[in-house]
Length: 151
Image: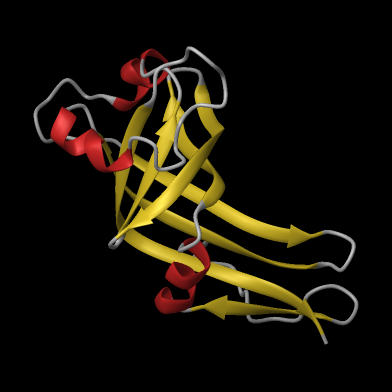
């Protein structure tokens, strides 16, 4: 999360913000779901919806056609990977409560059959029929998050 922000300060009317430790972040991410892949594309900052699951201490993303990500998320250099962020949250806007977790790390495309096999039929498939599955593993260099709640 932003280093310069004081997220331990009170939120809006009657609300507070609690920083989450790594264990709590991983617990919240464990059920998988919908998140956002954030990266710098050739067109500027980009955030796209993805489905994700946790695999040990990394996040595996299910994306659609790899051509969309090839130019922006492949360096063309062996073992050189782009840095990305994965954001996941659960927000109740009416109650003004929820949590946000941000995972930052290297994006590794799962191109080989052996790398892809554990994630076929694991709920990471595209939502559009006929679009090929593409998987990206994000190995974190940092994990952080916060929870807002009313007092």
